[in-house]
Image (cartoon, rainbow, N blue to C red):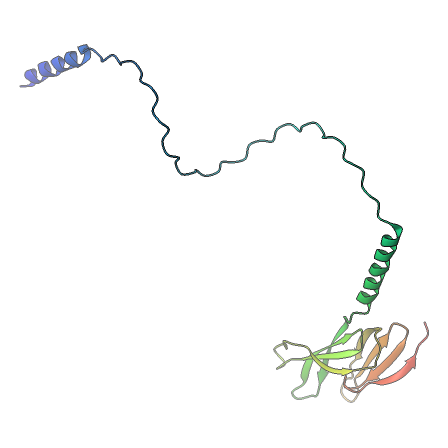
Length: 184
């Protein structure tokens, strides 16, 4: 049986190998163009080529009149001056009121002399929002606020000062008293 299989296999190989191959016929005419397919994804950008020669020189620009320049300069100076007068926070301190339990918080001073408080809800957590408390004086040149904390039996003093040396003091950050002006 094995022998018959070997003979059959050899005949099959010879038959397949000796079979003549088909010769293709002449090529026909090209048919109509088919419908356009879906657009593919965009490929990656290739390397940049060499820079081309410079283009022709453009026409010269037109100059702005000195009147327009002066007007623009005046407007910019007014804008700068108004920006300087804008109210800003200039100082921030911590404060403590009372003994048991103490009220802790922060006080902010604006350039216009407003005092803003942020009270802590407890001694172990911080407040979340500053609220207007009082105004020291009708001025817009405050620069600093500081505290001299008193220990047991001593008083605490807060001092605010302006750019030209006017200073004010308070014992509770609510009622302020003018002290005068120090010359520098």
